[in-house]
Length: 437
View 1 (cartoon, rainbow, N blue to C red):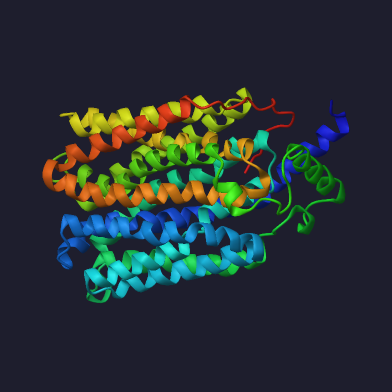
View 2 (cartoon, rainbow, N blue to C red):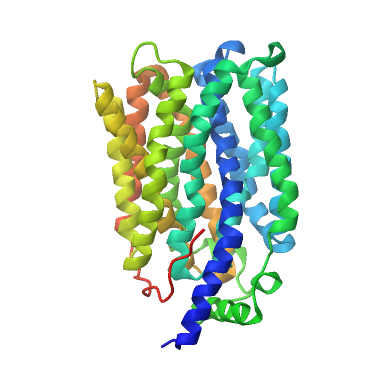
């Protein structure tokens, strides 16, 4: 049982690291996600300008995941060797530079090469940040913390969707199309954030000057307690890590639901434009913002509820099922109002599972191989994204958007069933107040 003074120090420590880490991590992921999905909005003009077919666009959407898949594990090895500050700063500068250079793309081949490079540089960001958060926050706080971090997806979509729609329709400066300016306007700030990362992030609690000695001692002891009885240090080989069947079960769960989620980023704007006659690109951006506006409120509340109950499995699986139902509603409904209801379900479902799900790996997998394990899980999501987008190009050609969204619904159901049938223990009830950003 913790003494009152320990509880007090714990609360102060969690608030302090929350203030210093979560807002900046949130901003970085905001730009990462915005860069990830901007090609879906650019396609509203770009495909016509450059003569890109639906099959070619499927290839553009999927080729990103080839290099993203290949580079995930090496990138997370690098974050352990170089530290988060240097490695994440470097990859931010690199992917921001490539995004900016898309302004000058003149052909399908140019876009294809750029998308491959983006996969190389972005591969290490998300798994690296999940690993980084696990190095700073105790397990009983991670669903809420991860939800706050990943709420950047919702906020980015709320802000970026209407902004992207407006840019491609109205930003025609110096006789260059709006889709070109979209890449430049969203790429340059990423480069600047990469430079700032070198001065803001700290690799370990021991290095943070904004923590007192008592706070450092409490946090280090709290994190060490969670790893008792598990392999520590560098005692696990790569083969030992990847032989764990639990790792592969989690990988398949994430692969199928992310295949649906990532495919929706590229195919949903076009589907929304067909909701009603006369919708402009700006209208599409505004409609796309609605589900993510709802998700902004749902994600932290659902993550906090998962922490409060100490339950992860059903808190991750239920939103997956909700997203699957949403895809079917969007694909089959006739009225605009019902389709908008489906969009709200989509936003809440496809994002609310993130916090509870990403709190699971550190519960079930050894900390000695956690960084690589997270990279493996996220790599499988990339594999799913590659095959989903590649295959959906042909599905769309044969069955239209209806077929695309039915496939996405099936993928969500598969993930939820795989997760529900796993044995996942409860976590201890929280002893300190939730972290605030």
